[in-house]
Image 1 (spheres, helix red, strand yellow):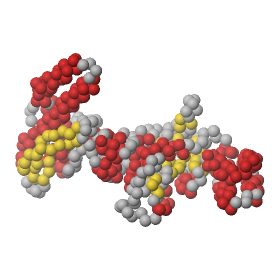
Image 2 (cartoon, helix red, strand yellow):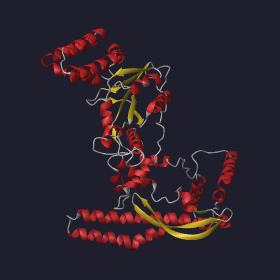
Image 3 (cartoon, helix red, strand yellow):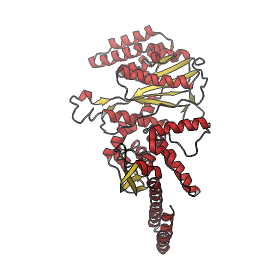
Image 4 (cartoon, one colour):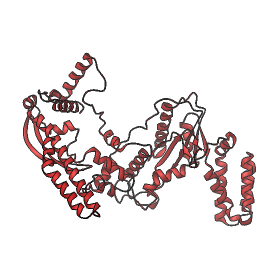
Length: 483
């Protein structure tokens, strides 16, 4: 770090002074001034980081125990793409004298996999943009500089993502009612497993599912807000997949709410079989047909009646309000009798089957008179899924559709992209100086365990050096133990 600062004092400050002198000649050249300062400061930052990494590599190289167990093969110049640009530095390649294993000890200390060329912060920036726009733009935004990552690399990173379980609330709350809305998006497939494997047009669509749970609706603002909103979803195919999805939702409810106090869980949707099955999988679940689709089918059944359309609709709505299923059926039968077109008759029959087939779901919100039973699934699907996946002419693979829908849902839940990148390594970072104080017995037991697992890497010797360097070496030792 000291060398980088000295170099900046000798050269960098002079360059900055020249930038400001040039700007004083023409105060309209704001962009040139800002760009020049940014480039100079970013170069200093990259040099500082490179020097820091080389410091740790040098300490490993000089370590006494390392010399006993690992022999130096060579020192290589390498680079890592970060969110502030590519950092070039040197690291040492070693061979284990006993096993013959080759590795960069610095990579192990830094938690880097073999051939890894991007840091966590760059990958997080990549995901932030890719989830919002495209793979190509995600690659362009990995770094603040002009350096880019190919869209193929972005795609592969997203395809390999694994997602953490939706985090439950810190304390189990007591609420009388919970509300679940559910719907799916219709996403075009370019291919399933490899390009060219889709032969029939009817198989080129996949449906990522979206389920979200909330405690009610805040009506104080003009724009109603769902309370304590959590999203779930992805590509869950078949009965087994649907069961898995509802199981995840059910586990969240169990962990977040007092289910003994809970009276009902309203499951709102368009009547699709997978949505109705939520009432089976979710304890105290009750299916409710959302009013949007009810109105939609009533309008479809009556739109061809011209001047009589309003009267026919009123009769159907009156039968619903009075809870008279037989009356609604009579009205539909009458509409069928006066409909001449075969195509229109099929439409009326489909509407009749839909309304009568979901009669129990309609009656639930009629009887309960719960003002919070308002399904907004269409809007949520549009915002969470369609805006990225189907509103434009895009083609996805099956894996890509699943991962992107889950990534969109992760973001909608307020997930942090950097934490998601770190989750991929499934490692809990260990900070120098431990968050909790352990007994001496615990410390010795943990040290023995780490020695068995890591051998030489757990025994890096700490030399008598100034405090900042001692702290660095302690951090290095802790990072190696966390591998």
